[in-house]
Image (tube, rainbow over all chains, first blue to last red; front, side, top):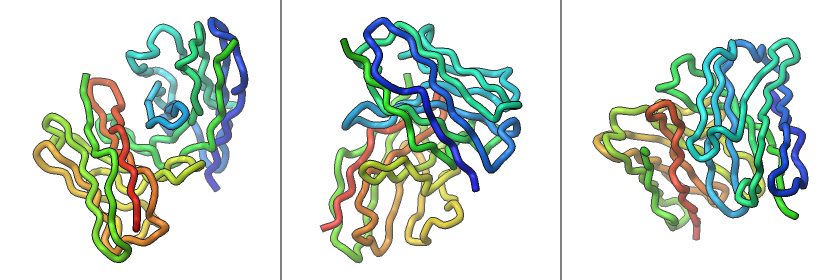
Length: 122
Length: 106
């Protein structure tokens, strides 16, 4: 059974940093492109970042570019999101999501984790 | 930047057909997918590649995409279909989500 389990969320002060993790099981992580998506309370979905299966290609949303870094460790079946200079409007549930398509033009997310809540507040 | 526009809300009576639209410039030239999100839950893929249904998604869910508009159609809508629905596409190295549509079954 495919499972994605995010962790690392919590309360952080403005300007602080946080590293989110996504543990994958039930499939071979290295053969899938992965993404991070967030959802602020009561708001819609916002895509943050993409990383190819090998880790060689990365994309970022303009809204967070320069403040976040996506990475992966296929040997550990894990995906990461390093977030810096956090602001109140970064408060959201952060999801990792699997992309089963090899072409970004056809990107879609067939499995999502349950999410981890990040709260940025003093 | 590319934008996808959805109506904030759609209402439908049980057993009737619900249509949720997603508009974007030349959207018909891109692949579109749709997600269902019930309160407190993670999104679930219901349509991908414009018209394909993942395994386990009921046949009452269908999709289309032409011109500037993609449409998610739910035939014979059931109370359990009440949820938020999001369209999504890819443009210029960016994933774009629509703002979401709240489907009310009443």
